[in-house]
Image (cartoon, rainbow, N blue to C red; front, side, top):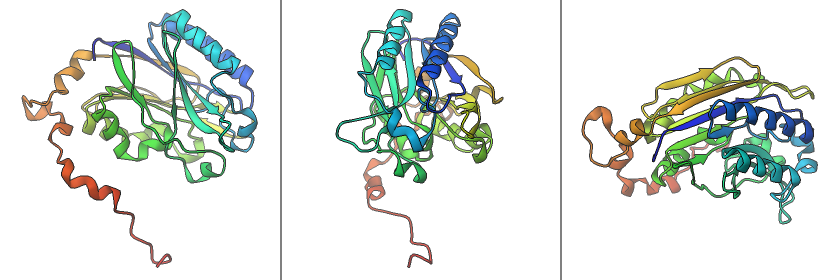
Length: 287
């Protein structure tokens, strides 16, 4: 990292199907986060539309949509990087992507498309097939959305491609359990094993169509330590400073001590081709 960076993780209640209401909430929250000194402002999965698979095709938009252009203008005017979840349509697809807009302060737009869809999502969405790394404010960063983070290879690929900060926007409903409790089972390991900062946020409250969200925001450091967290299921901005010195001390090939290891520098990649060939063993009812 070239310099420290200030990130803001937003948990919000997105009204299902009401892009106008949601974008007003996003813009108001952005103004608050800017006043807090944030350089990166991260909103949940599908924050712009709400998480509503059954009607998502009617809500899907392209990067030319006025709502996207307004978010881009806001990023430029405030000189921040906005990461906003939205359903992305394409002329080539019958089903939209679950995408995260990355609106950069120079006016350019990037996008990450969720590559690992939950089983129930495959009926409504198309999976992405790229793992891009972006740069802004002197920081290399990447995005994985919700279900993506159950696959440890994702964080490893991003770290090997140079990502220093990983963002994890979610739309996890209350019925699936307390999000922070679940995250603590695997998110610290993603950060620790790959020597990255990992920052997650979730939707909260109600979507006004019967689905409720548990909220939750957290940041883990490159040794898996919890740097900050917020556990209530009400709207909130969690603002955290990420130290460049802390990360840069660890991310060197030459190990100075066991406690300062950059583990990926010692991996034996010649042994891992088998990952592409193996699959899970069939269960008895499958055989």
